[in-house]
Image: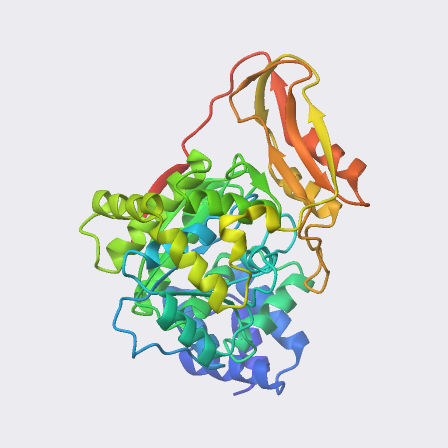
Length: 434
């Protein structure tokens, strides 16, 4: 294969053959094709897109660039969930053990936070001793023992994705629907799944704020999953407001434990129930959504989901005592109250600024290699659409030595207090079935 011929074809909007795609991806990973050439191809895909056939071939080549996990000795259906990310989105943490408690194996490979969104791995690692970097054999052992394993991508799994994402990030090519879809699906297919549920978020706190763009990404991923032989469905969910009552790593772990106890904020519980129901339906252990929701509710309210989480925390080296006593989680040394400046109706105008506030406090990353402070964060004392009075607590900021003033400036930009009650839309806008 001549790399230049591939670049010329895609530059002009042409369609690449399966052989061209396989050869180019292989060469990009091995280094026989230079990074600058790979960046040119990624830019052309960003501009012209890909057909469903091209995208399936591209995803398959990415998948073939590394090892795949296999759990053939586990008889249970294997189903995972992926979220496109948002502020306060801790749903995976109570969701995975709740689904596992209902008889579905959940091999959940998650990512780290970058920019205004938090990462599941970072949240889990705020539990003392919890290890997310598991070798494939240990990951399989935990999955078999607990019904769920919570880990990160290893260098052997889809190395093409790591290479391509780094180049996209460096060249402002992240917001490409086909490249996002192939990045997500290649990693999930490497898990040896039977089915996948996707939580595609829209709104000011989402990676892709426009619901129409989110819907297009959802449809692309469903078509790609079908082409790859993977059962999938999508929930389009709102990030016009943060999820739950907190954002920040240890704060979100404590809130997740409350959800696993059958308590916690109603919106988090709703999302866990609906995502879990769809995972159970695709896994063949629930007849329909109603049956699936009932099973997830039972797992949460009975304590079975909490017990499953306790087992996986212990199996992955974490301190299981935090399950019964979340005060053992390390907390930020200082609190600051941001109060309402006037009477009126509280609403969010830019949820991304809440995430930016946490980054300013040291709780988020601008670069992958940045270190984070897991103790900092924000508790939301007011809900969108709530009537508030001057001086009423809106945000409780958990902080350390850095970034308080910058964080407060972000939180002031994040919300408004209006004279009229705002319209607050539903958390789950629609469900799209593959």
